[in-house]
Image 1 (cartoon, helix red, strand yellow):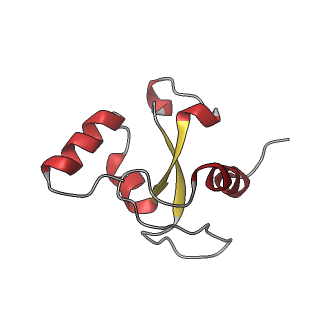
Image 2: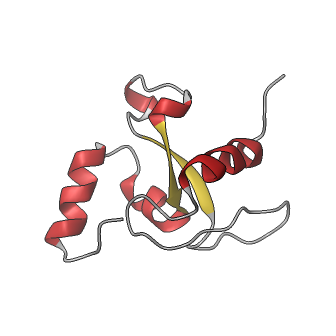
Length: 91
């Protein structure tokens, strides 16, 4: 049986906390019917699925909706370098 993203997010939050790995803001878990929000926790693939990354916990980090959306399928190191070049905080 496949677990929902909410269950996976809760598991990772228990292990690693609720701060976005990129910008450091505290996040919350979305519930059915809620509007998307920058503070909504999402699962981000360290190695994007688009280039062969897995759904294993070792390849997942928590990112706020904004950071995950902005990163897209960009390499993680490239996204972090881009944020630092723009003077944004690293989480």
